[in-house]
Length: 113
Length: 114
Image 1 (cartoon, rainbow over the protein chains, first blue to last red):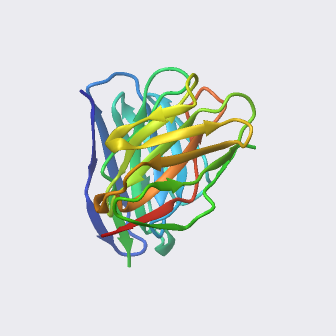
Image 2 (image 1 turned 120 degrees about the horizontal axis):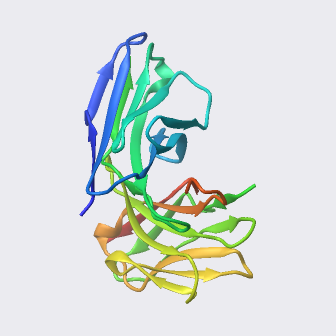
């Protein structure tokens, strides 16, 4: 069966510091991968998605970037964090054709102080 | 542009009563609709989806959803609510592209009281 991992689970970082969040998927090959941010426990904002190694699409111009160095690894990064980067970051994967389901990881809670 | 609306920020139900969480959508073409549930400080869990076929879709934990094309709705239902059903519920529609991107509603908090 497939599983998705995210780490760290929680992170407190000062403004201006770098960021690296990691997401890995097990038990599948060539998944579509997604990074979402959830602010204030409500709506989800799609940040990045990837359909293959090295292929990254950005949904919202911002302080963050994403990379996919391996088939089942998706990394969210920043060179300098802003206060507004605080939130709950969720990684998701899907596979298959139309109507495929996205499955979410446990999330990373980021607090920028 | 495709969109999803969840008109209620919060739904309050007594335990044992039926519950409904509302969702309406706007899409071009055939809709692919999803419901997810989120417990505090957790990721989203998939409940059910509608792709095609029977308008009544059954999912996890006794939940079901009714697809209504004429009303462009996909309401989530459960015949008898449990206190443990209290959570944040999201409706989503799949974007008409090859990327599988989902467009989410703003979420509805379900509060089930004993």
